[in-house]
Length: 511
Image (tube, rainbow, N blue to C red):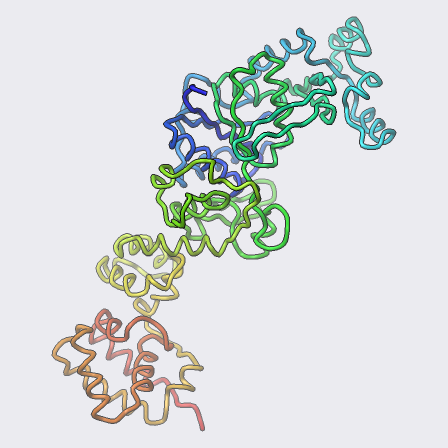
């Protein structure tokens, strides 16, 4: 194939974009960019009964947040529009008529009740060469009766006419060569008169052809429809421009068997949607990666490696690096377990790549959410505080738990640490330490530490007990970064104030 690579991502606006759909969009994007091609955003909204208000905007916002960019399509324009299928009715009618005129499709008037009766009468019923002559369609009614019913406004569908006994070959870049006999296929509905819209099967073929799509990259769940799409390309006489199929492996549950679902996320505590979603019908809220504190670069890196590898052990890769390494040669055929803990690891790694100043800016809204005015402390203070604890976090919100004591003095003290570290003699030792801190020639961590350690040694005190009691007064519990880094940032006045409150407040446990 010597044509310019053109791929499309074609979601349906029936709800929030699932993380599996995000991965499909990502692989389309990586493949297009790796091959100097174009990417199209097409909205498949032919199923009017399942349309959900706000879903299209959600999809576009999610892909934009993740940095998956389009060359043409909804919101971008281009020479092959319109890009919403509901706006392409006139185009589809032409191709429905072509199939009917060529005898490659037929009109069927079967009511839902008649179809249900046929299913009840025939085990494993499907509408095909073995059953269609017993149904109510243009093949059995004749041209005159068919036209009379159409003129009378009788609802109908158009079905593809599939001849049995033909081997249909699907060449797939991941699955390889797949051969399916047409006898197992049913005469799928291509068009419904009720809403004057085609079904997925016809609309996709027509759009992919007219939009000059060279590669159809989609989830494994669409593989069963590929033989039908091959037959449709042949029926239209478009075999020479039929796109290359790529069916991606499923994203699987983190535990057990089966496809990843929202219930798995709810059960195990991770999102399965890129952004927070509020259901317009029920008001139910579903978590999103963005609102949970994931960086878009981390989500992209994480998803890229679910079903694909770069051919080596490299894990941390920017979008440009992913593009430079991407090909379907290293795409797995088997499903990929959704190791959500690995996603947290990626987020940790990407947070560490941020400068302290960048991370401090992300922390400001978190401080505000906890009633802290960031301007009261200033960018330099916040940046230094973040730098002392960033190694302990997986998400920006974790900074509050790790660094809150830099902004709020403790009012309560951890009981377990009191029992272990606060002895009857501790208040007196802390009072001595306060005098040592007051007389330090410098509050710089590197200069204060040796002076205090020498004092502890000369007094014969237990180093662990002294330092942990000291930490307890400053932090409220025995955790946090290096103690003298804490005192340097708090400053001598705040350090002494907290020590005095600890002396006055903390009571040694009774023996």
